[in-house]
Length: 384
Image 1 (cartoon, rainbow, N blue to C red):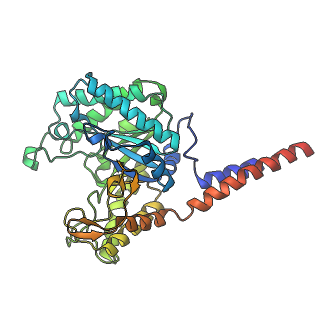
Image 2: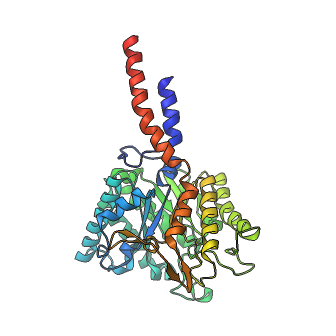
Image 3: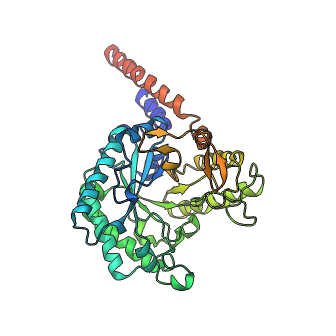
């Protein structure tokens, strides 16, 4: 009975993210383990570690964040990815992954290649599978807190207009499903922990509304899958009548828009059993700077609290807005963002308050409970 009680309490408090995971993690457990974190830019440059320091990961953990989405630009390297610079990339990626796992931050690797996403040729498909195969082989023995997010976002900026983007992955769900099926098979075949590692499917469009375009055969027999979606990747705005509109405290339209953004993700989970993760969002209007600091805080707190209610983990876009990775310092003071003066440190603290309500007390209780339970169990055994 005591053991059952202990398991119930630790289950409520969640998984200890500093503990190495030697057994596969279910998506429901992974949601809680990943929690909240940041998208990153290290591997979107040709010198990924020029602004990286191992202290970055510890600082992120100490702030209460538990995931980093490591967005990787495949176009920085020539296919078939056998040159020395790609070998260096894999070495650097492995270093950051290792540090994340050591500290207790879940690394989520995602692929970017804007030209390939937009034109999606057969050669692009082959290169996509090759890239992921090489990454997966390099990291196949890393523990199960590492996950692979198969697409960052299916962009169409390279092709410009819908008329010119007819062959893009976003416009061609059949291509999306073929690419995804092929890469899932390739990653699983690399063995090691990749056979049961969490794979996070990308949205065929971008938002949760597009998740139902994912072919059922991709996930129906694989219980180690989740799906990524996002909205507000460049923040809310004041464009009246648009889906990301927010003003003041969000009443009523802004909050209704948030509900509309989240609902398709919850419906997808209800219909398929596949849990979701939100890969990128901003609290500020990164396009026009239309929201004041008070409005940015109102949106950030509300959005984070609504995602918490639905148990949807997320990554803020982007770490560099809140933290100087080169200097290993959290940013303080006013930042001018699209003409709007914002204290992003204050914004971040308000977002943290929306999801941190029970975390500190839960961690303290868990640390107290474990030795007490072990002590009671010991004396119970002796008295028997």
